[in-house]
Image 1 (cartoon, rainbow, N blue to C red):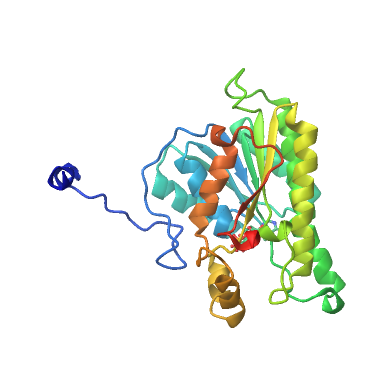
Image 2 (cartoon, protein in one colour; image 1 turned 135 degrees about the vertical axis):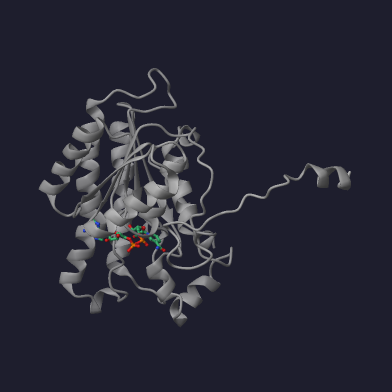
Length: 302
Ligand SMILES: NC(=O)c1ccc[n+]([C@@H]2O[C@H](COP(=O)([O-])OP(=O)(O)OC[C@H]3O[C@@H](n4cnc5c(N)ncnc54)[C@H](O)[C@@H]3O)[C@@H](O)[C@H]2O)c1
């Protein structure tokens, strides 16, 4: 039996090539994987897509069938770089539109959605990912300006973008008609496990925690309001993810302590988060409505 199994191994092993999402380390990479192209259809819009989880999500969506992709970020040069590496890594059939967008600017958000619809005709999958960490200090030591900044980007920015996305999705018909597993559009808000539980004394990111709890609340309220009109809205609540920024933090004692508290004993890769977004966006997650899907290696179940 063993010999037969051995003979069935492919003679030529697939050789992965490191691609545009691998600048941070050797483990957290986007290999040049075969494109599956069966789960998703249509147009996607991602905020904060120039780096980290947003960039990995762009790769995951494109690998699973999205062919038109708006890569938006406050940093236009980085968004353009992500767009061009994604195209060269995954192929010329993918239309990528890099755009500058500050998610806290109401007018810019409306104009961006309108530009995407002019270019691609619709928005099927929207991922509201742009966010910042905020200071790791408890309230008594927290400057008000920093509080407002964190809430503005992490909560108001998600609401502003999702409001415009909902307005657009209400105008469009589902790509697959008369199928309960294919909505008019789907929105995934990137929250955090700190949208579910409080941070501990080791990392008291109080404004971030408040904002991410707000994102989970907003997700539930809008999911209820728009489910019957064919828009599916959910949140992803990641634990610690090895983004370029987090890799810097991991050198310190604080993050090492956080890692010790994670039952799976590791951080997530960015690619895993991108793939979880695919699940929420696709028919595989078709009965999920207002969920706050926790993907934290077991951190919050203790
Ligand atoms: N990395 C983690 O461990 C982790 C864990 C839980 C949740 N998250 C959430 O995931 C999301 C992405 O985080 P990341 O770790 O990939 O961060 P990142 O810093 O690598 O990427 C964030 C991107 O957002 C952009 N951005 C910042 N402010 C913006 C604004 N006002 N408008 C538009 N774009 C803006 C940045 O330019 C950057 O490209 C955030 O919402 C974050 O809170 C991250």
